[in-house]
Length: 344
Image 1 (cartoon, rainbow, N blue to C red):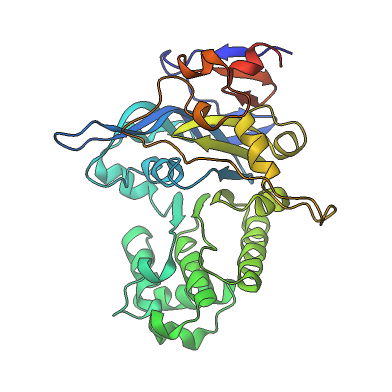
Image 2 (tube, one colour; image 1 turned 180 degrees about the vertical axis):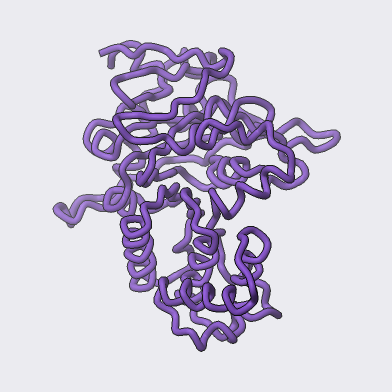
């Protein structure tokens, strides 16, 4: 069935507050982010990306390194480095436009409403301050909790929530194992009872057993606290196991966006299909894994047409000259590919 194109340069629509009977907490509309450095071509890190996050939903954000995942997440709360600029689009939290807020208003949203579990806990934690002090700082800065003994009790409560004993709050990050540091980062992200948590590759550099524990912890917290989570990852197995919906990015744009069953059982974009071929199937242990030849494009030197065309096994002449529109393929399913327009 041919897809219906989405006009990506149209004026932002009014935010959607409910979808399929569930409140929409976060809606991103046609967001574009460029890194602008003097005397250099701008790096178009994210262009015209849209998605919605409903209450209690877990959205997986996948793609190769350098495809714009972390940039997109940092932009939601305007935490981009100095060279990063939002050049278009809107970010709505419960109908409020975060891109129009000043720093003071944003500081009320950060941690209270939306928090981030940063990639690489050892780099995110201050090595010369105790873990308990760092969690307390988030509470003091963003929440209205006093006096000091109440803050301390909240720190103990948070550490217990993520499976860390109370006496460890006086320890420094280097005294924690890798898994404990990641649990501490999760505790910090939950300090002010946010509704949305962004988990930016929270299991990077952890061994397989610890990864499984952290993932189980996040899933249990989501169910216990009613969290909505954006989970940034390279691991398609995690996505299949945990996520409700999946946004596949390539070269800064949306390749495909759909519910998890559609992505795994009926993917339409060649990049999604190639990613899945590279993922091991336990039911077919003798099957040879495929790989995608080549590398993602430089964001300051993008190809003229489809960004995936130089690596795509199905590319045709049009793909090298004309960037595909984002096509609606069904309810909550879109893909940016000329082949879906042709009904392939």
